[in-house]
Image (cartoon, rainbow, N blue to C red; front, side, top):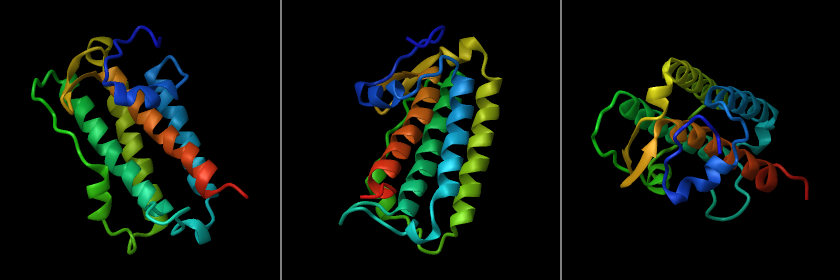
Length: 172
């Protein structure tokens, strides 16, 4: 258990939370940011439009998905940390991906967007006190705590880093 945090989340997030080993949400997010940016820097330009199978996202689409999900998770964390009791809706990542054309997006711009988005989220999380980190709300019809959302952000990125390494970048 990652103490002293109140980790409340739906079962569908268990995998993401389990991927984060750091006990401090702040350290977890910062390390995860560094690791992901290093991986993105190591991806050859020839691979960014690659999908490992028919019907799977390209690397650019995957990174756009990570950016989109990061925004959703951080928005939820902010609303809940500010004690907003609004039940927050879920989102369909596949619909979002289908409706997002990344073909004209520059790879370096996407990396810069993630870097700046994550830096903003790091600053936001650094500002949360322990009471805010432990506060809970409702998202996707399930209770969730701010601390759990921080671990979910890091774990979601780690999950996709693992997929990138295993399915997109491995030498077979």
